[in-house]
Length: 259
Image (cartoon, rainbow, N blue to C red; front, side, top):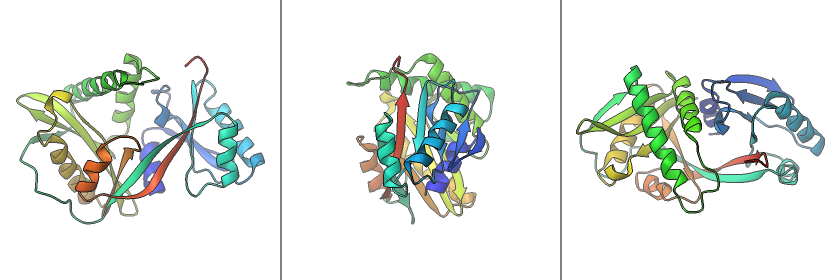
């Protein structure tokens, strides 16, 4: 699962080998955490972690954050060292679909792959709506600026065509989007599900999940991975569709004090 997740994260970025790890970096999207991070960590000792963090400073020195993907296979001394170095953990859950999606099939909807300039502008508009919604959530500690939204849309586009983004249109309005990636060694991934608030509870998310799972499988995936925030409710929806929780997503993030 980690190989597919890291492969998806690396799409559209520069991958730079380093000591006990590698970095990914995107100069088109420097504010986007998931496009500028350290992954593949094999460090086992405090001294090796120090090499990893020095490499992160070398590669991401002009970024306002540091992010390290490290999880269940990472040495305990490294996880403890990240805490000691001021990193905070953001947890999520990986969920796996090995058989067919459960429940009734969705109604037919107007779904198309994002391909034209107008499509990408529409996807960028949805990204901004998503971020505005996140900014308004109670307890939101970091506001997502319009520039962050622009760079996020650019990072999404840079993953194409390996990662396909699909728009769902209702009554002439693009109201939702989602993406599909065939992944690594038969393990695909679907990601970035968003529906405009006023269009929710109309089966749009179910329709996009069915469409994107089918797309990933048509391009070679057998099982399909989806991620969910540990403290959010979509994971319960995914479970009803047949996705089974299998592992944690552990992102370690350190922000500049000015943030």
